[in-house]
Length: 100
Image 1: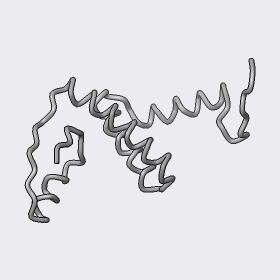
Image 2: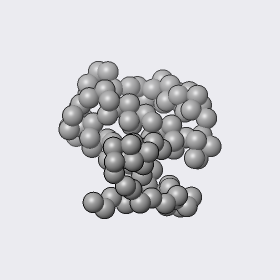
Image 3: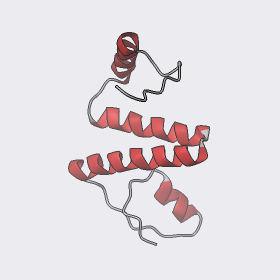
């Protein structure tokens, strides 16, 4: 089966442990960036379908990888999130904008 997608670091090892064989390559920076964005969308879609904590954790893992790749301090990202929430609010009030 062909995939051409970013997988977790231990997936080839796990496939081998189960008696399978995988063909892999190490992504260039540009390919890695594209695959990270694809993976973020994939994990978000999976969460929307399953609504599971596991899929939500996968989203966080991809965000963590993006932060590391783009040299974004994850603590600073959280600070930015809080600042934006302070200025514009969060989503707790469940407000649906119908017209503007």
